[in-house]
Amino acid sequence: MVTIPPQPWPTGLAEDVEPLVRRVLAPNPSPYTFTGTQTYVVGEARGPDCAVIDPGPADEAHIAAILAAIAGRRVLAIMCTHTHRDHSPAAAPLAVRTGAPIVGCAPLVLSSDLPRSDEAFDTTYAPDRVLLDGEGMRGTGWTLTAVATPGHTSNHLCYALEESGALFTGDHVMGWSTSVVVPPDGDMGDYMASLEKLLARDDVRYHSAHGAAIERPRQLVRGMIGHRRQRENQILRLLGEAARPVSGFIPEMYKGLDPRLIGAAEMSVTAHLLDLERRGMVRQQDAVWRVA
Image 1 (cartoon, rainbow, N blue to C red):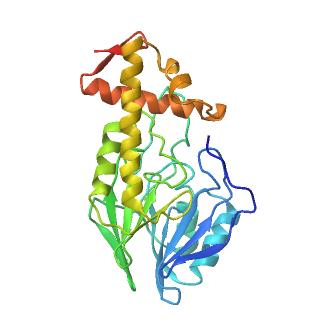
Image 2 (cartoon, helix red, strand yellow):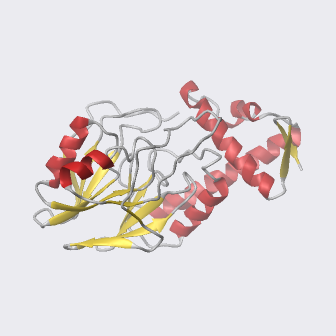
Image 3 (spheres, rainbow, N blue to C red):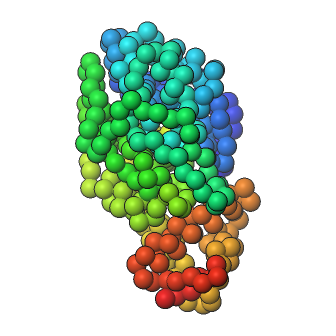
């Protein structure tokens, strides 16, 4: 079980995390957001312009804290990694206040009868420009390049800060927890491929939307890939013992799990099962899974 560190947290404060980056923590802690969503302001502290990454929830106090971190600079872009409600709703009101365009991930509105264990999608998100893999934004002394990383969501982007070697990873890679992959939009096969894509890069540091900066990114990504392969092997071993519904995996695979996270665990197992089914290794009938 993940333990959220004791308060006080630096909610609402602009923290300098590297020369071109300031971080502002939103007041939305939860079992899925850790101490809250982290918004990043990218640009020279005394420069004329900047970009905002993951503006977060449409909370007036948080928007005011972002404006304070901008410190009068012109905002060239408001950039979202994806459109869960803890990441993108502040984009529209911040655009009104600053006159900046909303640039980045594609809009996504998902209709599903499945219960969600993570944040629902932001139906208000309306970008002025969608970035494709390798496209980006440039300002005075800073360059941000989009890195397509589907898996957590189908529209997830990371952003590489070319001048420092940092990568803003949104929810794709976080230091405090593994990412939740929730079907039908979340896809475990895509998620694993995106992890392999990051492993092949040479980023020196990750700034995620939740938790501390990651100073050994490739080591963490390698461990995350190994963790997911271990989960996959657990599923196949358990199915080798007996066919079972998704709920039947949780007591064995997630011992001591916070009851609030059972839904997320079931969605993660489902994502693994659907990936294994596509690969012809398992099959389901009447909500019961078995070895193919």
